[in-house]
Image (cartoon, rainbow, N blue to C red):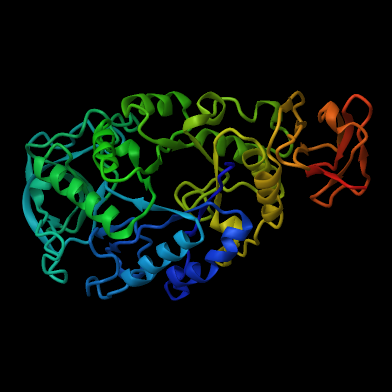
Length: 479
């Protein structure tokens, strides 16, 4: 109950940080802190070897076991270290969610000669060349370092729809292979957003479908992970994952959350419907609301913070987050929630029962690369969620600059319940009901921002204060 996920990596981790062994040593500490599940980064060999964050997928079967791309280990460690980490987390009762990247492959071993059309980057359905022409495409994946261990499948041009580089002329572009077409059931950005990067995998090819299912079954059996985080959903034909996930769930019950990067709630609902609600989705619209609230100089309407979000409209399928590896500074989707608003942003996802919150490594541990400090309030907020998020909630989302809510607590969880008040501009106060059963109780601010205690009156109402641009969370105390 009241699950908390930790995204256990950020983009700029150094290879010598040995993430797998570092997290293994922290497993018990993470459990004590209230972490229920870890989302781990892609564990397989990337095209850049130990420099690859994992999204430049080379060999899905190489979890740091074979000498490929100049290394045996991945950026994060070896296969044995990865499996030991999963075992250590399971021993603490922590679930493990694996990052799965199935949209593309990169770092091919050899080229194929292939006839292509160049397409317009802004409109992928528009051909820039009326007649096909020949290029050398990096589409042969032989995996000689693995020597057909686990799978004898080798990829070639027949298994892809397009690429972005002609090795013959050293020219970049988006090239659609002759005889192929972009999948129709994808996001409509760029008119058709099938193509993202690298060699784009063709999921209409029966050999690709069979191999991808075989790999999924192998991966689940080998690693014993409890769930999956699926990358780049908007670029893969709708309906594919519904069948793929169903087949894997015949083998093991899996929690699945997908990344459909759109702040349009309609697009998220459309995808959930297309996939028959086989997974949850990250609440991208909420992230952007939090980002705008933090960067609007106090001029964001806080009473609308949940408008247009998945957690408001479909909470059972919403995984909420403040930031992630794509939104952190220097990344392509940079939309970093500013430091002053981070505690309030995390209160908005951790101290409400709707959705499943996912906290970011960079907020929990800090980001050395950008000299970003940890959010010091996170451990306290997680602790309150785990111990006190019970009872009836009363919302006071009624002011553009000052909002709050309360939980009454319940008898099954003594001392549970709390009051939250946050501001993006002015200091102020709110009269909020915390339950008649809490009459005459004393509440204090666990954030340490307001020293004055709050005495609850005969009717179960207290007057709760907050500083300007700040967060206060009041818990019931003995005195």
